[in-house]
Image (cartoon, rainbow, N blue to C red; front, side, top):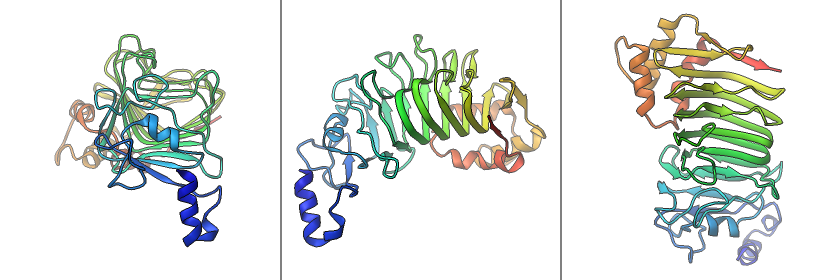
Length: 303
């Protein structure tokens, strides 16, 4: 199919038909794997089919809806009926998996990249919300098992399975993994477990645990952290170099700024009311919430 598409491009745009052409495929719970998937009007239905026709540097756009085994779409993993893992991209042209409308796509089953025999490299995941299952992901909502130069942006991860060691896990095969504007919440011993990763960065990462635990487990030696927050009950804390969480300065002011950005209340609100709101709200539009924190105290920890 790809050869036919590139041949058609060559007839109209000869210079475009090359190995660097990025094809964009579409996916929908209402799609059909018999379609070509090259337009919103004719989307594919399963991750298995989509990733089988994609090549390095292609893009997959997810239309609004809930994805998972129950929807007949599978999820982004080696496990699960109709599931699949994306092809690796290239440093200059990463493979992209993104929501058509950030915050309007939920994937029940989570994200799992890499296997012992494959490395999923040069991949961008954007605008998706992942819900964990007690399956091959170990109850985690996101696992980077083996992969380099993986960027996860504007995404939410929710976990709460008893067997989960962390809501998001970066294993020893993870290298140069970047979390940007990411929300992690649920019930697990840890929010993000990155101790095994070879290198890791986080920029505007928010973790809210519904049970006692560590928001971020010990980090790899190669790390860069900026504006990493933990919300626990009536406390909001920055990640400190000592691996503990330090109180924010000017807590009353930043609480008000966050409340305004989140649209919780026009008047005074408590950390409890803000935390309650954050527990319910869809996590994708973190950019609405985080600027107040960034304005008040841009905090960067690079080691």
